[in-house]
Length: 154
Image 1 (tube, rainbow, N blue to C red):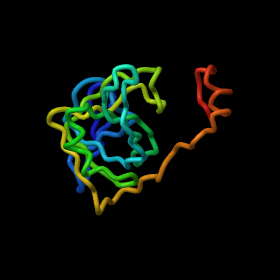
Image 2: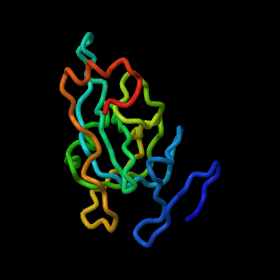
Image 3: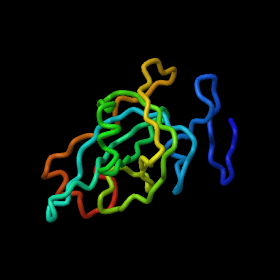
């Protein structure tokens, strides 16, 4: 395994040249590759202005790390036709942006943001195993009872 500066690990394999694990994702542009299962995605709207903010996603990698993803409104039409819940993807060229704690749905403080040169490809024959998901739905009562604890909702 090769090490990047600041102790970040990049995996080299016969399958792909450089794969960055989600746990090692940092702020800023990345030319490395991510491999992940798309758990869920949804549109985010500004309720006051009635405008589309973008597309939010939950992603999980082969190590079981869950992270949030984001596609800006102008890029949604490029990627949405390829997106299917439960499918495994590779993403080349992306940006690590700060995750706002108010809108956070995953523990990681960085969001995978699709940039102008991002390339999303469906992996039909992936040698790595990916968990199906790592989240659960809460009832309103469960959520309300735990929402001010500033911690894990489980």
